[in-house]
Length: 397
Image 1 (cartoon, rainbow, N blue to C red):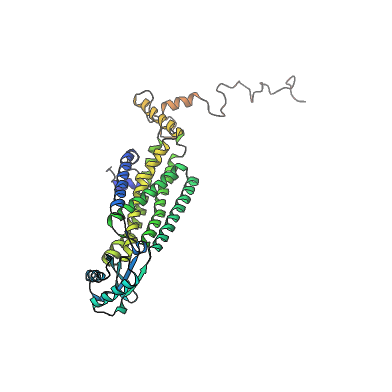
Image 2: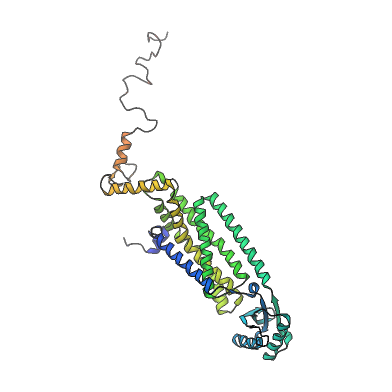
């Protein structure tokens, strides 16, 4: 029979990918990415939108020219304001009154904003009334940030309680560490790309938390199923059972992630890239990167970290030692491994361990009668003759 391909073996959970055995590699890669993200935070920082940094925005009709021409002329108009005023971002936005360019600048006072507005109208040769503008204070962004952080803390606390009640505290710690890693790596990529941080970005960060939690719970549920009562079985360590769970749930997690990433990818690459809907790129990028990271961290980080924590449990340590000791004895020929001798019972075709079979034959089953031949004519321990305790043992008159 031809050997089945990797895809079919993945669907059956038979690929045998050694994820747990290479956990030091995944931890090392995660640490390197965290350091790279921290370096990006320190050197590049984030491109804060006017909602967070404060600033002014001008909406100019798209009929005046191209996006590049508009940005160049607004930069020239800002030269009249002085104080190092410059354009922060420029994007094309669609509205009920038609398309327009939204140009966001650094902070201007009311007099400077009016002067720049008049200069922009003169540069483009249009009426100043067709240009709208507004000013945003950085206090609003600070309020949004504080509420987002409060929501993040409450979410993590609720997740911890749920996972402790549903699974155990070690799984809760591993899951929350995976969520935090997901946020850090997503923020690092966002910083490297240089996209503007807007309220949509904050919403996207809070959204990916739920998706990341779902991925972790799917894998941990299978881990719990495979490791239930594992200390009573000396054939498999906790890490091997967890690795099997990853292989069995890998395709389910992958399919879920792909289905979720397709519309988000369309939002990012088609909506923001091809159609020029600039308001979608902030939300699209954080969702796309966060969902992809959620899949990777749930497989390569959360479960290996769980195994690392469980290996400090004395019960699991003793169990793993028993498993490895038994395998060493089998390798040395001191104990015959499972599958070397077939059962003689025709009702079960599976092989049996000869050592287990010998022990099973030597020890009576619970509730079994003692071995030995029953005395002739005896029944239930009564003497022969059927007289029981009646004297004489004669017939009843």
